[in-house]
Image 1 (cartoon, rainbow, N blue to C red):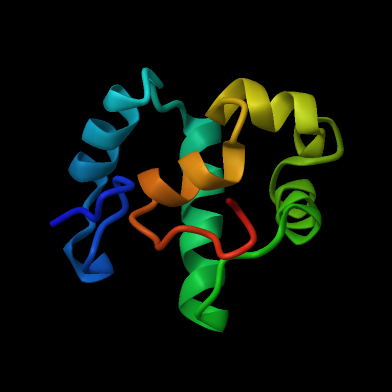
Image 2 (image 1 turned 30 degrees about the vertical axis):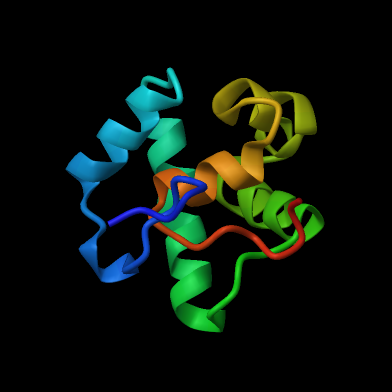
Length: 100
């Protein structure tokens, strides 16, 4: 079900309950703000079949939540020091290609 890095091997298997489980493994308690970002990331992936880079991702967050929440500090507070990788994992998406 998961690859060696903890990403789902079949994104169609994702559920909100699975997201909660993955988040708990990351020691993250999902809030409505997390869910807005997770859902936005999933919609972006479904539309473009790729994970956005940080600049594009911050722009999406700005559109969804406003300028304050699009800051690197806010995103890092929500998803850890590697926010895009962690958010993609929780969202059931593949590892972002731009992340090592």
